Amino acid sequence: MRPERKKGLMIGGGIVLLIIIAGIVAALLFNINSYKSKIETAASEATGLDVRINGRMGLSFFPFGVSAKNIHVTGEGGELLSLKSLKAGVKVIPLLKRQLEVTRCVLIKPAVTIVRNAEGKYNFEGKPTKGPGAPLSLKDIKLSEGALVYLDRKTGGKTELKGINMAVENFLVADTSGEIIKNVAFTGSFDCKDILQKDLRIENLKGLVKAGKGVYSLKPVTMDVLGGKGEGDVTIDESEADATYEINVKVSKLDFDKLEVFFGTDKVIGGKGDLSASLTIKEKAGRVLVSNLDGTFALRGDNLVSYTMDLDKVLSAYASSQKFHLVDLGAYFIVGPLGAVALKGYRYGDIYYQSQGGRGAITQFISHWKIKNGEADATDCALATHHNRVALKGKLDLVNNRFDNVTVALLDDKGCPRFKQSISGSFGSPRVGTVSAVESLAGPFLDLYRKAKRFVQGGKCEIFYDGTVQQPR
Image (tube, rainbow, N blue to C red; front, side, top):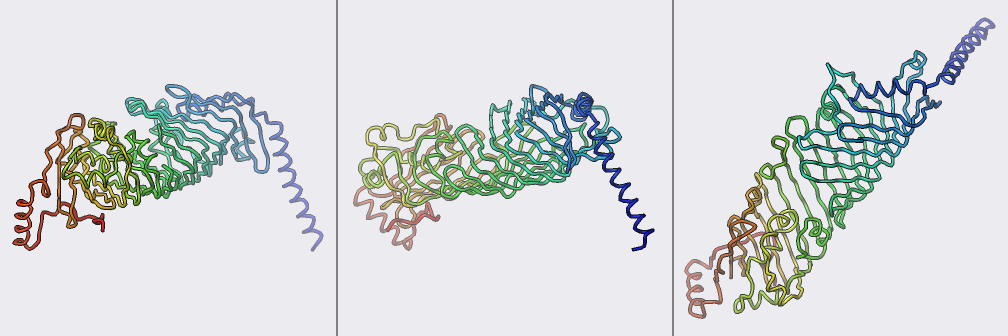
């Protein structure tokens, strides 16, 4: 290498080294705590919230950044966010000009409280500012050991999330002066140790999260819930005035006991089963209305336990005894969220259960409903014991809280009703119809007449049920 070139490289390297040393010295001499109040004011004006840094601030190197401790953010109605500490990556050159430009952010032990008031406004939306706000963008955000409490003042609902870890990329708030929830965009991953809502506990929830133009999705998502393993996806669309919620979930080997406890219904069935639901609900004028509920809901299981009675014992003797309403068996099918509404007004078989009790076996069970505009239609509801099969047909009007032509039947091997009984009217004060005895009650003469009629009709009968549950052999 020529001496002139070598000398030039040494001079150039020295200049670069001097710039680096100068930058480090400047950063060391730069007292960021003296700018704490200005940072608080800028953050408050940008978000429309009250931002306070109660702890000390500091600078870090490699990578270069700013840290702060004991941060509190307050909105309308109280504290929105508290942080044990925050670490932010910043650009060096703007800092030398006494300007702070953040590129990344690490939040340690954030505690968030989100409140939705009676008018549907969130506490993080802040006070509106004049004109469009400056955009806020971060390359990446990491959150660890977080906690969140969501309070809905309209419904009185409360949801708690604990042990939150989140990694977000390309975070952008296009306009900080507008509705933040409609202006946020990001992608990332999310996991949460515990989610608590009344008697429901979801553990180890993990998924990929995405937001943009007011639409938030968690897809795919896995979880431990109701004693089983769940998977599915959730989408919340806040892009319009009225939000839309979509939930698709499948839970395998769930515990029926835990399901019934969560929905506040009496324990009717015990054992393990599978749940699947695909539901969409839309708000109207900021209110979640049952009339805007559509989708499907299904429960199924094999080798279950009947807590309330020995089904084979009472059904085998039903022709002669009829000691309980046949529609009492509807309690087996109207479980989960449907049972929480429909079963509160009518005490299914209390007198019989108290006097007889006992347990029985359910070899096969399915309860499948299709929901349209808040009306649930029983598309495949049946159970089988070792010797009997029972099915339910009809609709539940969840909007007006009424039974719509709900009928329960004890079936023969062709799916025709041996006995059937209907229930109608309001959930709170239903009307139970008389038992329609198709077999056994009218004696040998009527039985002979019926068999002769079937012979003329080619062995046909009025098929009540032709679903997936088979007649016991």
